[in-house]
Length: 119
Image (cartoon, rainbow, N blue to C red; front, side):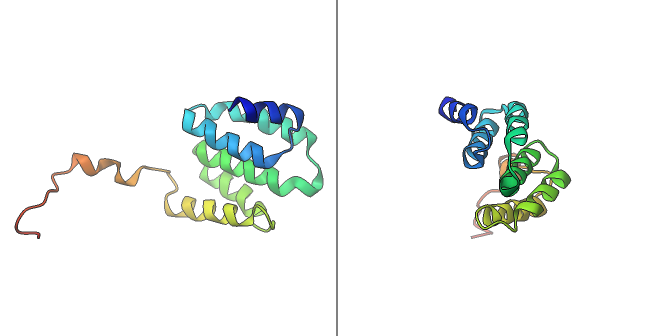
């Protein structure tokens, strides 16, 4: 993470690095730290890089449990040549699971088992 942070300090509008940092901070449980990097990028961004900014904002909103806001941002990014495919993938995942619940996390809590009746 430190390498990505150092790169973003030099070039805050590098959205490839910002997207990877968002993923890493999400996995580390520090998603709230992302907002300052997005704010820095927003100040330095150019019109030609707005799709990258929208993609990163959409990722942040998705992981921050704001699916409506995430869909709005990702919808803007889906028309870009570079960010279009991952934006659409994230949109589909939000539509399929808007609450971002772990669907299979409760499988161990059930009484399902293999018996001779269901073999």
